[in-house]
Picture 1: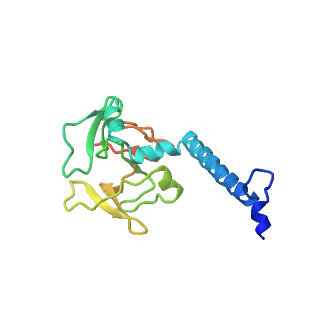
Picture 2: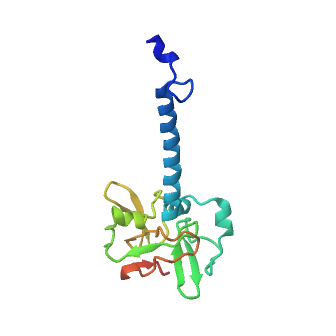
Length: 178
């Protein structure tokens, strides 16, 4: 057994098992880097940036839409006006909010793959909600804001403030007009 540790494997003075371990680690690092860049290419990295934008990104975003001077009542949403869309609702970061025609009053019907493409506008259950805003309990107990009883969503492809890419998708998704 002592000879095992003193013999070389043809790769230097380290035993063969150490070289295999090194190759596995290097391979894992290369795999992780490729996986990361494939995600970035497919847009999943952009979705992550949308969920957690940096303050610099938020400040530098320019849009055709203009923001009203103050959030409407209790900091739940902001009213924006666009020359082609009219006045519509956004969250406090300026990301457009949508409703889904297949929902019913007080009930969300967007789960699984739908919820990945259309993330919910989740609620922190504010003590006092503005007029026409309520909270819908989803299956699983998550709270979601609703406007006039209709659950509110973001669109994952809207990556910058003022994007309204999700408006009229499939003729069932619509920006919330005020």
